[in-house]
Image (cartoon, rainbow, N blue to C red):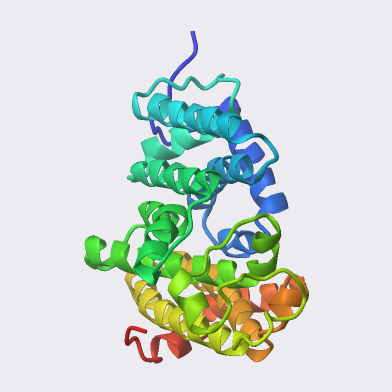
Length: 314
């Protein structure tokens, strides 16, 4: 008879195989996050890989070429996986290795699985082609697709030395917003090519970019540099607030977060240095620089520098 997950200290070969699958997905697909996840001890690394593999599945549905109705059907299928995980209805020999790994992780760690429902909600917003009038509107979307992942990750990390978990969750959420806004800036032309606009409509109008981005040069007569600088300032302030999470974590969990966030923070600074680059192609960091950021994360250097920056609202 197949056994369901029970969170015991010893994992079966089937569960270990499920985790290996999730870690392979993470190593292949998570070109930024994998550098931080590698810094974690094995149980936390496995749980983070399970979360990433499930999230990747949801994202791939949203970004795929299926029609909207089929995307909605498949997203509903991912919710059914969450129902089975919550109800303890995933056996070790289940055909879905992501479900097996996620169920085992949920038995071992206090994961707020509702965050994965929020992720699905956010991807459904993409499927519907929603646009955002204000930053507050966009922040709702960002909390679904990134802030929720921050809160889920905190379920794996835990808080150290008696720190307030609720406050830590707020910082994790804010750090997720910082990462997502950086993603939005990086992908502004790619998203435009796919018919998507994420930056707030009031910001686009303010800087003369309301007609969108359809080439490798800014819209005629626009203050594109001003728009990017405005959004970069917002992202920097989100990073500064979110980095207050780090002293609330144990050393290796803090290093993981610092590495993952540090890569996006450096990406943001590349965009700030050359705003037009996001219209000419995909801005990225070379692997050696990502590895360097991971080392800095272990030393806590980027976190201390960023935490000193002002956190006033834009």
